Image 1 (cartoon, one colour):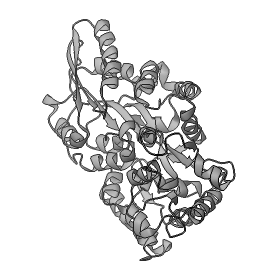
Image 2 (cartoon, one colour; image 1 turned 30 degrees about the vertical axis):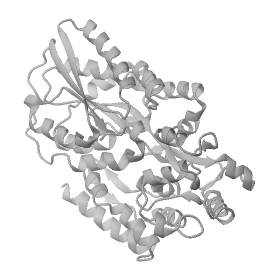
Image 3 (cartoon, one colour; image 1 turned 90 degrees about the horizontal axis):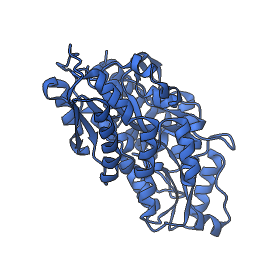
Image 4 (spheres, rainbow, N blue to C red; image 1 turned 180 degrees about the vertical axis):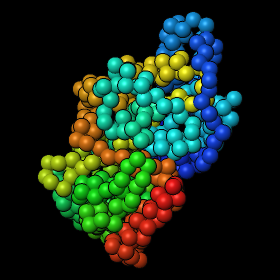
Length: 432
């Protein structure tokens, strides 16, 4: 998946759709060669504005080639739109495959099932910098206790709010989920030209924090075996909280039921909403909109006053292909590209949030805008089930359908979540 911070509103859904398109079977197998010279091929994702990324990467490659005489690196920046097809082809044709790829962090389980990624557990464990990787980022490269890549950057969401509207109405940033909902409805009542909080029936990753904050889970299990928990009492409580925001008193269902993450951020940036749930990666879009200079960001509140709702930790990873004939070199290059120094430079040039806790703290100290997102990460984040079935669940729009059935009045929360749970379990079961 291309989870570019620059393409952030597509952050998780796009990644999962990519995984859905990944190969179900593969002829890929581990190479019996480990050449120490020659040409390494790497595929990285092409950004909207790619030059700053290229400059950071080129510096890393130059140092790598100096350190390894007789080697050179060929880097290709692949378009987001064709990533699924390219990676599928690479897994099924080792002879033309790259040695190292950038991929979306929700794709790990699917790529491992497809046999495309090399197990680098020992390499990761022996890497001095790995100890400072945040736990959720580490989870995103781990399948059944084995590590299949290194985290490259991370992205989370927080609460954007209009400082001018809050000042006008005498409001304070909400400190609990109940305050968030009541504040949204007060804004709508006082300013009917605005959505109080822009929400979307297709905004899965904006809705998940409500489920997690109420003690719910998407699924239970592990080791590749999962069962849906979306219809549990705790999850239903979170679903009710989120869907209560669809209506004429906040975000009319007729307009908001079909909205996704892009739509909610666009509504906020264009001045049509008092609040929105957006990522660190949404910053540029908001800065380019009508609300520039009239907004601030705080962590999305949890149920208890002063708490922070768990956020989905999106982002990208780097992985060595199992078929590489330059394994040692590829692992070294991977570590260099994902090192603390490189991640710090990518933050400065691209805004990518580092996956190392200490580097991220330094970034927050230099840039106040980053602080709410760092606080959110520090408070604890969540991830999707580490199952290749998640791609199928996401591509089938199981959760958006559930939300939309509820806000349209077609089904109540209990019935809609029960149906969603059945669809999820069918997907988990199909993976054996």
